[in-house]
Length: 134
Length: 351
Image 1: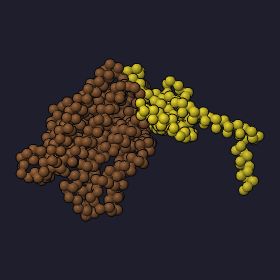
Image 2 (image 1 turned 60 degrees about the vertical axis):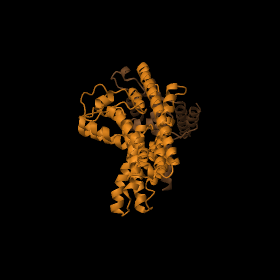
Image 3 (image 1 turned 90 degrees about the vertical axis):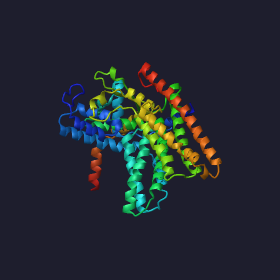
Image 4 (image 1 turned 90 degrees about the horizontal axis):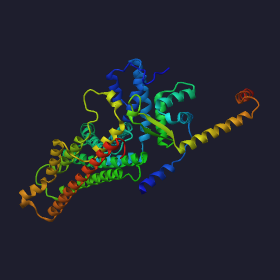
């Protein structure tokens, strides 16, 4: 029992690293898919969200990495219950993953808010500054 | 538009699937082969996709399995095998190559559970490393290693590295997949495995101790008393592994359709010690017979024994080890039966 508690404590104490862009997209896909978040579906959703072609292994590798970080959890289903009689691995968000995604979205919101305060698009302003210097 | 799983009627060739299966790290095999089969268009496209999988999955697996402490402990264990040799640059390079090889193997096998099977395989790798090192050291670097010393070092390495890797990997596995607390079957399974490991360690240490306590009566006695029982026991454990994927034509389709939960129960049962086949029993008897050989030699040549105290001590140790082994065998059998019953009644991963 003590060992269990120690493991649980260890998981809780893992430092929370900020999410990368691709990790944010994958986590968002898992959230959006809810109960039906398995590899192939997550990949489809990630492609839709990113609006570009994504390699399939990249999604699986990222999901595994996030499982190591305890941001997502996965469970294998009984193959008999699946239409193609193949076991599927379904992913769901953990509390840590939820927190990490909230932090990422909060940062993005702050960025959008800050940029929207500028009268003209920030990229034009940056370009003008650059031209003035040169 | 990508094809979905049910609509792809064109199947990739078997030989391609078999090759890719061998190249992929084992934890990604099922999912990768399934995805590749679903998206199959042509062999060229398949190879391209498979290369992408291998290229992306391998570095990720190596990164995930890498633990500095583990690597350093292994380095110490492997160095002990070559303790008799003088330290030199080729030796260090050789060790670095061996460790790099291990790193790749760990990535390939991640996540390893720290099972007895893995321990035996890792131990055998050390023996292979030693055997590979012999011509390299003797021809390339003119380092002469007596055969007797090399075999003893290899058997010590087999035991040492097996223990280090089993314990480490087991720890990592427990961290990754915490046990369900309060599951009595899980607790019993874990306890039995720990007892097996402790008995194995005690057994190997006792063999070394018995050999040093008793007088050397025949040539190569240390090899017969230490190496032969350890190797026979290792082979005995190998014979108990489940024949999940029998050799011959690889049947990828069967592999994909297999229930991984049932596979896991079968694998866990295989980690328990229960020699059922006649060959396994014969190897077990052989291990015990060779371990007890020095006592027979002592009885046959009483005149060469100067003091009886070490003989009595070592004989007591041997008998105690044997009684403990018989008791453990019964416990292993009981736990295996419980697992089997549990798997039958509930049909899912309960351990």
